[in-house]
Amino acid sequence: MKANVGGIDRVLRIVIGLVLIGLTVTGTIGAWGWLGIVPLATGAIGWCPPYAIFGFNTCAMKKE
Image (cartoon, rainbow, N blue to C red; front, side, top):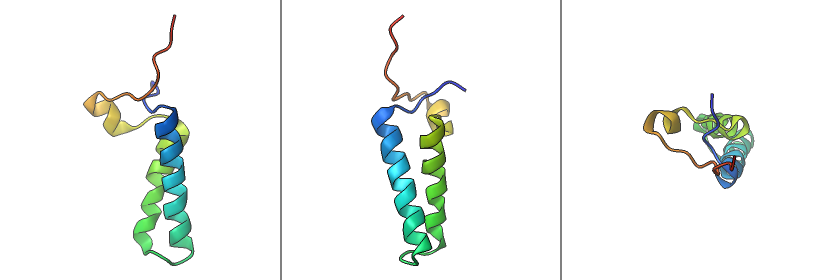
């Protein structure tokens, strides 16, 4: 798997995932908040399946 999620995108995914999970644990929102695991995982791994399917890439280009 080639990384397709860049720096700012990764940070936002991790933060949003943690917020959703935190809100679920505190009882502020319902069980749907557990979906925060998805952005948390894609941010941590650096790879997003829908990005791969649709050809998106937010990673910076590496100079060779």
